[in-house]
Every structure is written in structure tokens, then in C-alpha cells.
Image 1 (cartoon, rainbow, N blue to C red):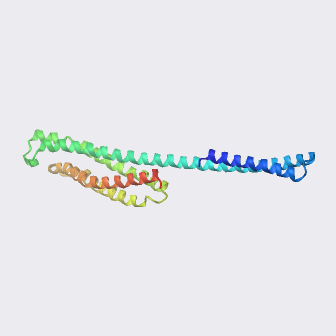
Image 2 (cartoon, rainbow, N blue to C red):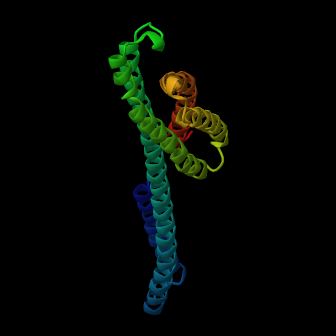
Image 3 (tube, helix red, strand yellow):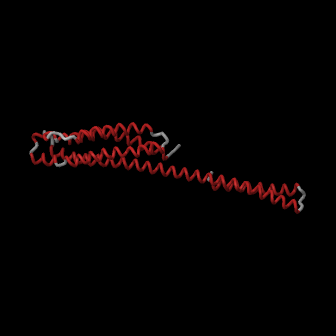
Length: 225
């Protein structure tokens, strides 16, 4: 029952009770003028007391509704924030994949030793961009920790298992990116590109597992049973 309906019901019931009480007191004491005044006074006091209690109850319910609405809005905001963070990570992974694909197409199936100098230069020209994208991916994965923490707080402990999925994902990305960013020998520069391909192939399954459980928890929080 809504607050307005509940308040209307209580006030209506109180009004009938007040009329009945007034009539009963007036009848009980014989209907004299002084009795009428006493009956009115007692009835007014009774009604005033009930009205005060109703007002207090309605105020409490309004506060509880406001608190629930505010909590729901905050949960939704946290969910949107975490979802956006995940989308940003995925977007950077896709950008990295496209740059790697460009180098792989130029190289073809040949070993790097048999790729002509012009094509090698074109391939290696992508390495600074690949390194920047790997750094961005790692940075965004680390920043996701903030969203995971917020999710745990608003869920009141119901999202603790999300943290392990996140840590597995973060540790893998950190390890692979650190390998990519190491300075290799000149003749091993292509390892940065093949290492980035490995990063994507290993990280995507963990990303999808993390995304799936986070979306599941966000749905549960937004649709409590």
C-alpha cells in the first residue's frame, strides 16, 4: 500500500472513531452544555494525538522511501561506472588488435628475416603505438579496482567473489604488458608484436568472465528479490 493510501485510510478511520467517541461521550453524560464542551475537548485531543502519530509515521515512511530511492540511484550509478570502465578496456583491446593485425598483414606468413627492409620498417613503425596501447590497457585495468571496490561496498559484501576474477585478470595483464615493454634486442623487436597478440589471446577470456560476473551482480543489485 502506498503512503498516500495508507495515510488516507488511517485518517478516515480516525475520523469515524472520533465521531463515534464524541457521540458516545455526549450521550453518556446526558447532553448538557458543559458535557458538550468536555466531549469536544476530549475528542479534539484524541484526534490531535492520532493525527500527530499519523504525520510522524508518514514522515518516517517518506524518509525510508527517499533513502531507498537514493540507494537505488547510487547503485545504478556505480553499475554504470563499472560498465563504462569495462567498455573502455575492451575498446583499447580492440584498438590494439587492429594495430597488430596491420603488422601481421604486412609480414604475411614469412619469417621476419625474409621480410624486405621496407616492410620491416612499416611493421616496426607500429611498435610505439602498440606500447602506448598496452600501457593504456594496464592503466585502465588498474583503475577498474576503484569500481570493483565501490561495487563491493554498495552490495554489502555480496560481490566479494568478483574481486578474485578481477585480480586474476589484472595480474595476467600486468605480467604480459611488462614483458612487452622490455627493450628487446634489435633483431627481436617483432616479439613486441607477437607478445601483444599473446596478451589479447590470454586476456580476452578472463575479461569476458569478469564482465559476465560483474553484469550479473549489477543486475541482481538493480533488481533485488
